[in-house]
Length: 478
Image 1 (cartoon, helix red, strand yellow):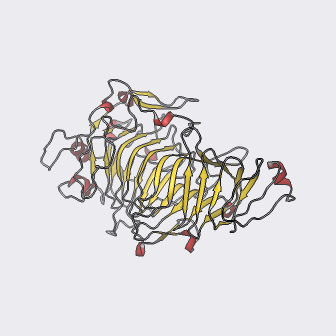
Image 2 (cartoon, one colour):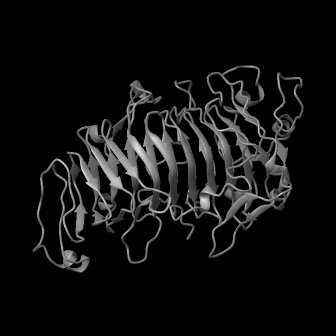
Image 3 (cartoon, helix red, strand yellow):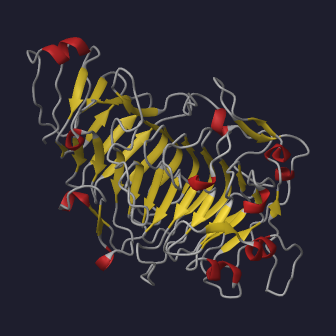
């Protein structure tokens, strides 16, 4: 295999001299006695295991390929070498057919982070996992946006139950390197954070945190992978981004942006599109989400910012239930001409659902918004959607009511504690909070039911005693 391990007595010696460097070709790397500093570069083409008995430095773009498995043991940290040139910025790409198995645990997560002396968002690209599940790209196949089109950047197919491995108790920090200064807002975002391209439902995705990305946190581009206990924290663009035919289910997820993004337009908690031109290409992007907590910045946004808690656009279908949206000044939920009809005309089985949620915007009139079309700048409150969304009871003029509640002040959620510098946020609703009741797991969407989701009584990602986001050291809020 072409994985390069460069060994030295100390990191300083590694940087200064090649006296102890070597290349090894073997079926599996087994650490030797004593802690070594090992460089990961080029290609991994045979089964390989990393564990915390060694220090790992990732240089450039590393491809796991030829249907092999990269296993990373609990407590392993991989630092990504800083690079001046964009083409040298680091990334780990698990190609279609290969697997990555991250075996972290609550006290000893696997961590990918910047190796810079002063880490910053955008120091490296991120972790990119590619699979064989469906996308709505041409012929069902796509390539990583922002990278050269080669067989190693290809993803998608027809195997919706495909497995790309297992990601458990994983933290990714300071990603988003190839995000341009003026990224084109109407196309697929460049790869960033944790990108899952055409990843199938046979893949495990649990307890993963992406923080301090310059661009998006989680990107689901096509595929059917399901996930739970996911945290997207303080990222520059969208915290959760869904594109090109993603149809998986997510439960217990957190989007937290404590301060306004430097991205001047639409750094959203959730953003979703079907394709750039809002066509009828199948499969339709349709994430199914329950028990999500989205918290926007502490300070008020300028109206020109346009960042939303949830922005559904470009012919997306979606299901969001039992969730909390709060803290964005000018937006809780925003729709567009291609997505509004699929939500409000809810007699049709394949339409969207937004039910049993708690919705807040700092400016209450902007809790439900409408983007009028191609300019992308003429947005404003949508009284029609607001009235439709907050109908209560069992029946209305439509087949069902939606039972969303408008919370006019974020304090009404009664969270344990937000926006506290130097300490972890506490998203648990306190006794008396409206989030502690009202959850409902009945869905009438075609093939989008929530039968396989955990049934809890609370709305949002956490209950009064459920502290998965602050248990152990796997999630770090610094």
